[in-house]
Length: 121
Image 1 (cartoon, one colour):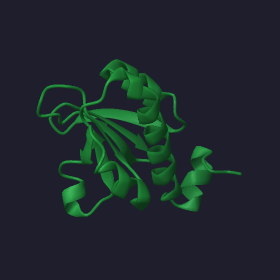
Image 2: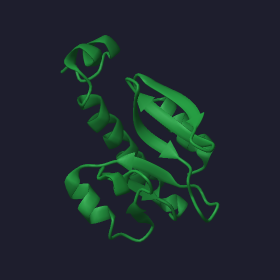
Image 3: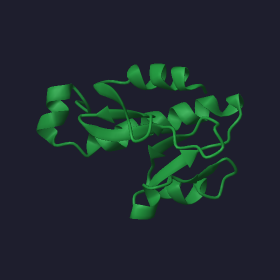
Image 4: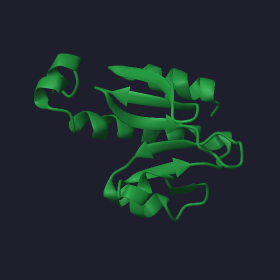
């Protein structure tokens, strides 16, 4: 997935905002809270970091092309970085970006969720 495709995908999720910060990373937020970071690849290839459940964290950190996200995981957060993946894994990345958006949005106050029209089932 290119950064343009990543930005288009994240921008289509509900109640998101985008900022370029932290050394040129494409940072996506929901309700002011970060759910995805595009950037920070040492090899110059696209890299995408996202929040995951504890189970997915345990599974993905052992998978080729994934690792605990630099900076974030070292601070005890359950964030994974996809750093070396072929285009055939784009659907998998989209799944994890959607899940990260959901996990982060559920951490917002009920008032903020309602204000943003999130999780109103």
